[in-house]
Image (tube, rainbow, N blue to C red; front, side):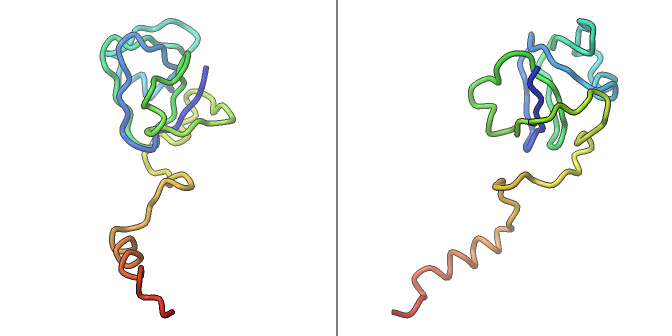
Length: 113
């Protein structure tokens, strides 16, 4: 089971097998079928907020990699790690304000020769 942390809102398809914390299951119980051992099958589309940690059986669907970061060490289900949405953005994910980007853009071409 591969573990991921969302870096943006993510929606997974029905029939996807997930590993979720007790809190995640409580909030989505009507969308899940219990398979045992902390595994659940999505009965409908299931959405995750930024910062949530979850397990995914099989390969990450094409295009989903831009919404998650893989976790190299498996966080135990139910640990609550990263589920509050209060995590910092991963390295290289941006985080700079639009003002920072504008000020950088305005500096282009102003260097003296």
